[in-house]
Amino acid sequence: MVTALVSGGNRGLGYGIVRRLANEFPASSLYTSPSDKLTIYLGSRDVSKGEEARKSLYAELAKDVLDRVSIEVRQLDTSSHDSVTKLAAELQPGIDILVNNAGIAMDGFDANVAKQTVATNYYAVKDVIDHIPVKDGGRIVTIASSTGVLRGFGDEVRDRFRNAKTVEDVDRLMEEFQQVVADGTWKEKGWKGAAYATSKSGVIAYIRALAEVYKQQGKRVDVFSCCPGYVNTDMTKGKGHKTLDQGAETPVLLALHKTDAKPGEFWFEKKAYDWELRQSN
Image 1 (cartoon, helix red, strand yellow):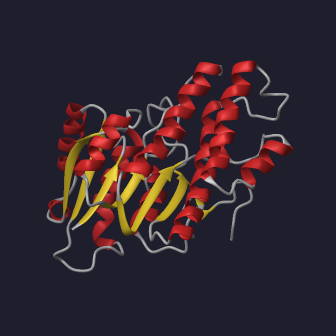
Image 2 (image 1 turned 60 degrees about the vertical axis):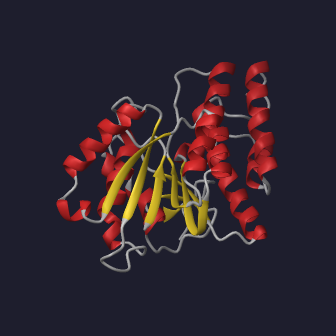
């Protein structure tokens, strides 16, 4: 049995990812015989909303898909360490696929917005990856954003992101961002005046650093970050031009299929994407 966990799977992009995982599993590299089954753990802060999403998904999925795939709701509030560790204990000895989808985009820009955004989009992702067990041979896909590319930062800050080799290096960048926003020096020190974009720069840098950590540890888990594109969700206030299914395409490609993706890479539109805004070949 193959197992996958999708955080924030009860709505928006997460819902689309759960649905696409189910539909594409039989065509994936993980499906090797008719007896293979996929269990998707739909992570939801509110279990009742998760159950509503599960019922909706079961109504949408074809019978032949449901013969091979099951969806189970699990309580997961990524901003709560207790929630994360409780689910981690339930999922021992580990899952095959982890999709970090949960995140926020807040209006405005001040110290509080910076703090909350970094807490949810960066530190909560780290907490999930640190505690939710993923088996050897598994994959971790984390939703980032093309707004996280390095254009817009001053040269020094951009170079520090580019040259971040360890998770601690990235932690320091995220801590400094919150500080310069709080004391009002962010612009003169070369930071972007955008909490969401900067938090996603942190996510991309973190995944790059984490891939190197895993390599040094000999841990056989591939980690990737990706941008789903501008998806029509509550987060984009309905302005996105992509459907949920279209937004789920790149995350599910990295989660299920054989690709030429290298651990630590950032992908966009089904291709590796240079976060300095130059697309890779």
